[in-house]
Length: 254
Ligand SMILES: C[S@@+](CC[C@H](N)C(=O)[O-])C[C@H]1O[C@@H](n2cnc3c(N)ncnc32)[C@H](O)[C@@H]1O
Image (cartoon, rainbow, N blue to C red; front, top):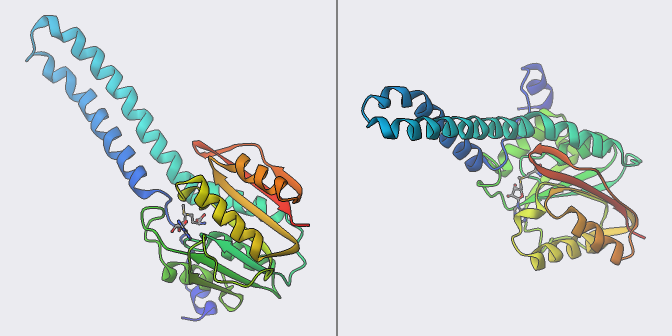
């Protein structure tokens, strides 16, 4: 379907839900705990009086735990559906675009940063790469990303490819900017994350910009970029849209 048709039909991009299994587990465990809290009074008659107090206390704690779990799941859903789009726009708006850059999105998933970057480079080109792990993002896949790029009206200058961020299939110094959101932390070992950083550095042109949005390892990315001689290495304050703090690291290659 053409971009014009999908816009006319009012189709909306769908950037999915991050860590869908974690969200599902929080919702399930939380709901069961809340149900048990409400069921507790009817169980009181069945237990000896000496146990009733313990049962009431346990039910109250379960209830609190349940509400906490459900609230966490709701926050994660809000983060995926609303919070990350806002943060993406803030981060990309802060980069100095010329409009003709070649941009790489590492671990693009359903194309959140790919589409955002493509909207800022009307005369440029954006490539998103991913290995499409479904446990990292709901209904992840190249077709979902391509659908979003079409709906956003940027399919002519944005594409997605299957590739591992530890072995990028691109020439050295072939991108003006490399962006990535909530992707690098999925590499379990620090050696693997270093490998991905080396690859990002390799494909970035001198003077090129990097913007990495991620949980857990932001300060380590910044330290590595500084060691590597990058200029203007900045780490944002924490954003709690997924509860675990998200940091954004931006820098310029010399
Ligand atoms: C939480 S999703 C984030 C996707 C997208 N950047 C976003 O913000 O919506 C993490 C993505 O990293 C991808 N990923 C994990 N390991 C990868 C690897 N070794 N190489 C490329 N992509 C990877 C997953 O498949 C997933 O699409």
